Image (cartoon, rainbow, N blue to C red; front, side):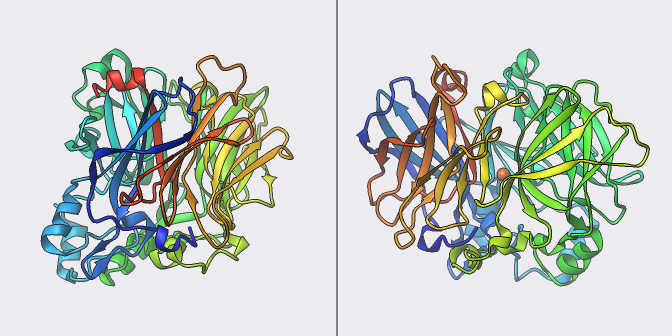
Amino acid sequence: MPGYGNLLRSLSQSTDTPVKANVKGSIPDWVEGTLYRNGPGRFKFGEKFHQHLFDGGACVHRFRIQNGQVFYSNKLLDTDSYKKTLETGRLTTNFGSVDVESSIFERFQKFFKSSNERKDNTNVNIAPYANHQLYALTETNLMCKLDPKDLSIDATVNVTEYIQDLKTTFAHPHVEKDGTWLTMGANHRGPNGPEFKFVRYKGGEEGAKAGNACEQAELIATLPSSYSYGYSYFHSFGLSENYIIFLEQAVMLNFKEYFKNTVIFNGPLCSALVTDKNLPTRIHLINRKTGEIVDKKFVTESQFTFHCINAYENQDEIILDLSSYDADYFTTAVYSYENSHSDKLLADKSIFPLARRVKIPLNKEDKGEIYCEIKDLKSDFPFEFPVINYSRYNGLKYKYVYGANHYKLPFSVVKLNVDEPTEFYERIYGSELERQIPSEPIFVENPEAKSEDDGVLLVLVLCEKNDYLSVLDAKDLTEIARADIPEDVKSAYTFHGFFASQETLGKLNV
Ligand SMILES: [Fe+2]
């Protein structure tokens, strides 16, 4: 994402001890708990730095909110990758960065034998499991179980040790009320080629007894890739009352390109992700309870989605809303550190993600491909980092989605009525000259809510002076309070997070 300038920070140390923020305005007394966020907090290590936005060292941020007061702290996670880089000065190979000192011999060894390299830079998301454990997540085979008190790493859990054919984890688990996770991963070498694995990490009573989430992992379904030469990149999936809705899309992890670009020429992983605008988007439905894969070939236009907004069943169709990029233009390599810093991509509307709606006709019978209509919900404004009133409306008919605009200056937080897209709100942060970066907005519902949007949005805003927590009324995005972090304490860019209520904090034993 472009145009972050100096605000795309590289922290050199954590702020472990919470600092009191200066609150202006009034935070409702029912907003009590902790906002957790995770993202790339450290890019620079001496003369070397990570070359891609997705690669900075994981940093978890916390805003403790109680009695209208706010305390901020952050922690650069002590992952093996981070410690190794500090000790040796060598960057670990990552999504868009490489270890320039690695030899072709080392890379061949890693490719053909199991590698000891621990790709544990879990900087994408942070989520509670079974209501009593806390995990920092990324998309390798590892996830970090954190001590909720001090954010030290309790255990680095390797999912492959629990489900042999599952080679990757997932950064966007769907979290059910009893703390169950629905997730997925990939197996590069299935018996008939690459395949996708859908997994449930059971919460409830079983989850309460688990030492880690993977102890309660069970395979729901295995879906073969439609292509033998690789598999579609995936980052999230939709969930309706009865179905997992998974998209095979235009960005492919191509095995040949991987071997050539990364093993032989020491390129980053993203150099093996190839966008093919001629590939349709294949839509797969999997019964979320039985694991049965619906035997129909649903397709729609070529596109790429990081984040599914929501999905629901509506009589004889499934509605699936996406934050979707045009396959003609999208590559993951555009989010290089250089591009993310600079204004290079700001004027380029072709890379805007748009809120789009796909309609999947459940009753249509056809042995061939069944085309699903896809339409822009709003074609004149970029829409990413979608957030809904998740605990009440995930998988169900809903009306409102909130998001962050990091593509069009000045940056902003937005709200869209998906039924009536002319109802659109924008809360601008900073200006074109004095930029501020708002994070993904996290929705916290009023416990006495009378409507879907009765609550607040919590937004971490990065500025040249004081970073701050912005508290918005979710109805119209007016700012009702702001908590300024002292100027000598800096926060950093984040991707995702969640709000832990007092009750959740109690279960996490914080
Ligand atoms: Fe994400």
